[in-house]
Length: 243
Image (cartoon, rainbow, N blue to C red; front, side):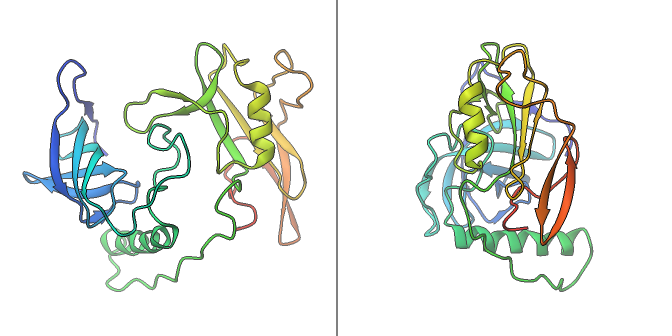
């Protein structure tokens, strides 16, 4: 996407009444206003909403749904207390079967628009066996007080997180022990082998808590009887059971 600018903080943010028509691959619902595309976080296709604009470019606007005038039948109450502030999960307000359907739609649309397939053969999306506490990789941001958390979706503000509902319990345990102790660090990455119980924590935290092994260059995970060595910078599926 082209460079965007944020709506000025010194004036009242613009609010638009918009009908949401589809879902974008980056997670926001799509609408149109005066010839421009609007990407609306926390919306669902088919809803009539009020969207507060937070970023602008020449070709599109970005904002967040602040009022739902006509809710989708797929709208549910998010179970996470950080949802809407934390920039991690973006679809907890959508019931899970419809999330899966939307992912299939997005893949098909990308293949049609970018790949130029007329009728792309998109297989049905597999539903996850475990929707919570599955994620084997976290990259936490820090603030000046040494707190760990994530950054909000559009305004890029730090949000302290004490327990993440999608992180593996082992990662949440490390988070609890490190919370408030990481001043001077930019980020803390934690990766965990669900089947091997090996871990990688970067950077080294020996001066903060030497009881937590850290500073590893790699860890191992096992999938379908094969063992993989995973470095800190490499890509690996975050849901070991689903992979």
